[in-house]
Image 1 (cartoon, one colour):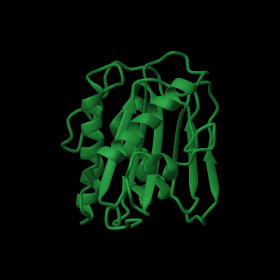
Image 2: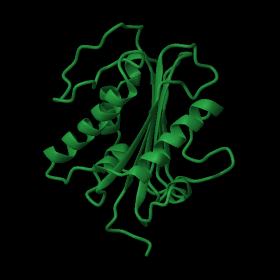
Image 3: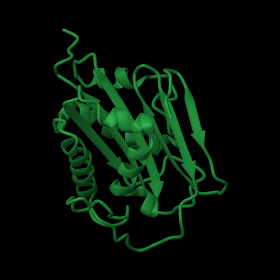
Image 4: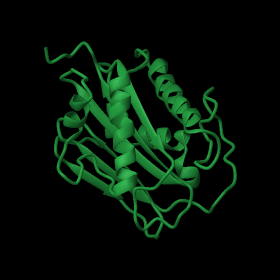
Amino acid sequence: MGMEPGEEITWRKAGPRRLVMAVALLCGVVLLVQWTPSAPTTAVARPDGGCPGAWLLPEEGEIGQTKQATLCLVNGERARRGLSVLVEDPALEEAAIEHSIDMARRDYFEHNTPEGVQPWMRIAKTGYRASLVGENLAWGEREKGTAGNALQLWLDSPGHRRNMLDPRYSQIGIGIVFDAPDPNSHGAPAAVFTTTFGSAAYTTE
């Protein structure tokens, strides 16, 4: 499905528990995905694409394992398409971590903060200097809160996929917290993902 800048698309299924994903390209494209997760499970056994920790549930392991699995999965998809892999950048990571923490702490799930601070503003505040930046968000409960599931959903959504596989990006920051940014969450183990993208080749200086 093609989209024009500013278009918003939402998929919904009934149910009290949900996984919502969003991506904002700085040209203004925003996608929202919402549906009901499956019944609780204690383990998820699926191919991991050679990335250990890809299907760790939010209550299992360390956040560091899920972070490294996310990086491995994203770079695996890029490498399969002949694209350069993304290198972690401390400033982008700082912006990603702070946004995930803020969303979980204040129970919102948006690219803009309640005060209206936009992604590029948050990223620039860390000292990162580039005119080309982007951001993907995801959160989910139980098996929907795994790195593997987040990646698959990004791949299945044209806008998310385009952002993640943009050949102009060369750097990434990943911020994950094991919490839910939703006051209506039923207390199930959850994870919030923020991935920020940038490229030093597109600087503001």
